[in-house]
Length: 453
Image (cartoon, rainbow, N blue to C red; front, top):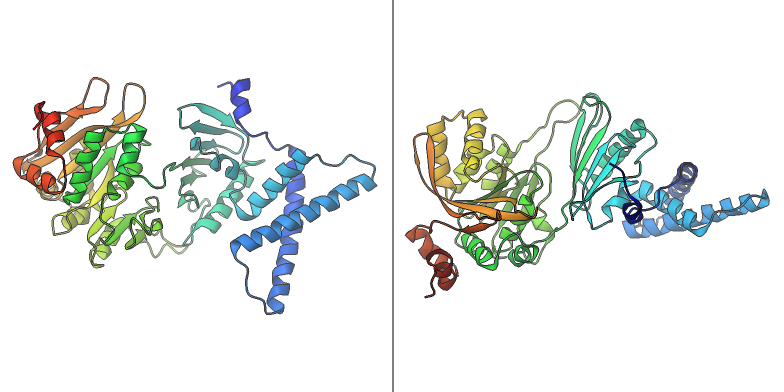
């Protein structure tokens, strides 16, 4: 893909090779001075500085080193740095010492949605408007890229996270909430994939504003949550399942105690003490260097049930946790939420059955369907409309199970443009609960029966 002049203008000016070499030298100088400074404070009995104070000290030291470099250049009769070059070099040094290196520039751009790296010098950026553009190299070599990934893991990790030929993959949450997956050794070159969460907090009105659903459907989804229906949000990769899950969670009363369970922290419900003041956020743990200490999501679901939750929220069902999750949903923890990868709303049942068959319980298809029918009340599926926008395209109410089949009604189905439109009305008993939870009956009649009350 050729990047045009107009597209290039949207990208930051690349850091030149000589500027990067100078930045590497400055980083070593500043790191040494910073270590001596910290030792001197400790010897003087002074308290440790916080991150903001340390950053200001580093910023001052970088400025001093640049001034020293400029003076040396003038003494030698050479031209000094211009202001733009000093700013670029200073940013590289600060990012290397405190941030995510060259990734900081891309992650600071609110328009960026996903970053794909196929080797140190092949970086692709996809923007929220769907545009895809090539960005500057992240490192001088793949070896440097591996070191950058290890530094990021060291800064971001709550635990030990290896990245080498013995453990050639890394899955972590970055400080801004983005999710990074890196792989090496099994690929031709070191590769990264970073998925941005542009909406760290989301509400049902936000979904309406973004065009994910209309006001009537948002009201219906909110009533499902308030009526404590167990809901699974489904869809393909990068279609907005986590954002919709956050929006659904915004309808939960702040007084409720939540336990969230994830493979990698992404939901961030515990980061909003106003909307969700009582949250226990749990993350699966990989094995340590000795291959011990692994804790998967299935185990965390069992632990979470012992923590007196009002609701259990599983970030994504992707394996054996499906059985304890369904057990939790059918044993009094109604109102639970989760997500799953599935290409259609009906396909969710096939995915759940496949995961259950691979679990330690080895449930048969019939047993799985009975469990799902007793646990899951609704499936909300996300897709793309005719204009390529993320939308809710289907909502199913689970009714029962009959042998090898889960029986469900599609209460919202894809319309001509791919967006959800009313289809089969919900069951009478469900309707009563939704009305009691505040759903507007007039809206329901307009949606399903085409007349006002």
